Image (cartoon, rainbow, N blue to C red; front, side):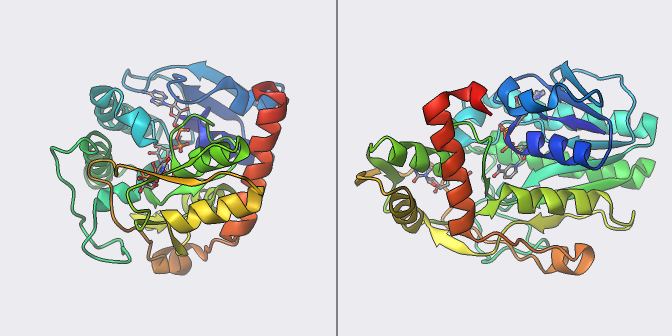
Length: 314
Ligand code: NAD
Ligand code: UDP
């Protein structure tokens, strides 16, 4: 099993799940946003191998299945080097699809709800084509992922490569980087330090948060599905909350003395996001099981340990 972006948040959980299932895992990462600490606990397993490599360059290895997670996912990081972000999605897809074609491997793409942009259709089903501004500062990520989907479907139609395209909605859990800039990690770190909670805009914008263990189950089930199941398929938790509600829940769960402080809303911040998951239910019998409170409690416990003992503690 080849896992690109395997040292990142989601990729590291997928590497661990595949090892638990008895597979040999090759983790490929350039450590742009991923860390060695995320995979530290896997290094002693003789079936686990780590390769430092940037997927924008060709890769010659053997694989039966490829999970492509390589790409920074936090707006702060993907906007810090936007040209590299687009290259990672597009050149990365071309290189890995070429590898899948040569080795006849199945390949799964970690696509995103960002392909729907700032949606006029709510909640978002897979047949909604989205509303993305190709010139906005989010486009390096959104359009890169959209082009990667195009490449996946063209490699499938033109070369019969077995593809699986998952559109992942906001996911959270242990192994998120504490300085990654995403809302869940920001709010928990701020709450644990009794610092102000940085709500952007009025906090009325919504997201639907999925706990990482649920997502990983969906991803491995998608990879194992019949060849006719190519996706795109939404994977996410349909329970929607506003950013302000999330801030209040995190303050409550951490028992923090933090106060909420409002900052300007980032440019092109989508107003609402919620997945329709009928397709995942029907084709994978998949359903997220972890409620937001339970998932946040586990995530808070992880960040508390990091605060106390540092990165090496995991
Ligand atoms: P992450 O930033 O923690 O992980 C991305 C990993 O890819 C990191 O380890 C990073 O070092 C690596 N990477 C980046 N550029 C690379 C390159 N050119 N070559 C090799 N490795 C490279 O983010 P994540 O949340 O784990 O996201 C993983 C994937 O899932 C991404 O493709 C992301 O777009 C997608 N996704 C995530 C979410 C979410 O909420 N977490 C939502 C939708 C989609
Ligand atoms: N957000 C916020 N405070 C933060 C970080 C993010 O209010 O410290 C908001 C952000 O404006 C967005 C939502 O939380 O509306 C989710 O942001 P994130 O960066 O986690 O993911 P994305 O925007 O890609 O869904």
